[in-house]
Length: 465
View 1: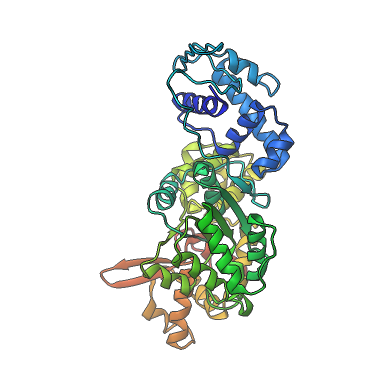
View 2 (view 1 turned 45 degrees about the horizontal axis):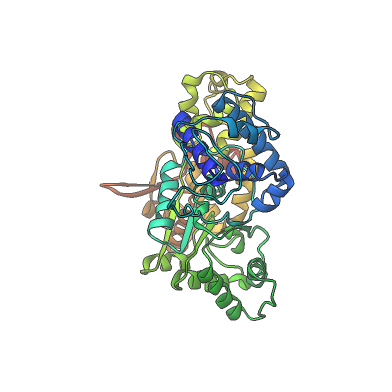
């Protein structure tokens, strides 16, 4: 039995025992170790750092120790697997000097049972370019969203996927976790952040050099055409993060920086061309051109992430908080937002020794400093008209109709309507439709942030303002 079959067998056994599968990096560590590779060599091949590979390996050996009932280490994993019996692994080779019955054989021997051809080879491990990708020690829930993304990629062959959501909601985490779910479908898997707003030429040059060190064309059109050629030649999964940093601060959502509008040419070419690859764009805000492409009959879809539900309890569990019966209340107050809950759980742990009950005794929503700093950065990106509307909504005690708010703000109706639409494209508003019309409001934590930061003279009226 070859190494790929050994890994599959262990994966099946793990799933039978725990309901979990080995993820991509765990499989890479196991395969590399069985090939006598060092952690440095595994890291180089997998695209992860050597320290991350080492940490993954340490957890993997503990997992296999529990699974196999014997202490497993890097030095002995091969020997242990060779002597481990699995009832499903019964192989008898009568044509060679190798007979394996109820055993795993790790010898690299090209003999096969009589009259059988070599087993079908899996797609080789993809070339990973993930050195700049952030690492997430935990991943919570999102099973429905992951299923949707996998269906779009594998079954519907959607070329361009956008994942939207407010900052910290988990866009990057789900995109990187998706890699662990479907690596076998790709020749290349690439992650790039556009955090520092690189020019399109810089981004394309960086990507094209991955496929070939040959001279890169100078003009944008030729670079895009060559890039599409590679997307056709190979099956690629490319994640481009922080798209929102290509937009202009203090302008309405999706307003491109003057010298970054050419990215539209790239996204349009990806959506409209016939190729074999999938590009995922991550952004905190929508933009008009992507909405127009969505309305057309192109292979493009968008996923909007909202807060987590019960899965968020894992965040509180990892922080060792007390009063588990109150966790659902905490999750509701902070909208199931993983980053906000993480900051809040840390605050409760340090100031209240993990006692959630004491923290909830306040009749006021507490905005931890980490959350406030996070929201500060978002506030500074807003256009002045958006800030004006947010300030007014923070003073409202109930959802308000759009027509009604126009009478409370000293702006022309066109500016108000366009700014409200922009706030929706940033996912900062809650909307509600009733028989009396459409209403808008702020989620409680945004309202409390604005009041405490900019409207200190307003009286506090509790969580449900």
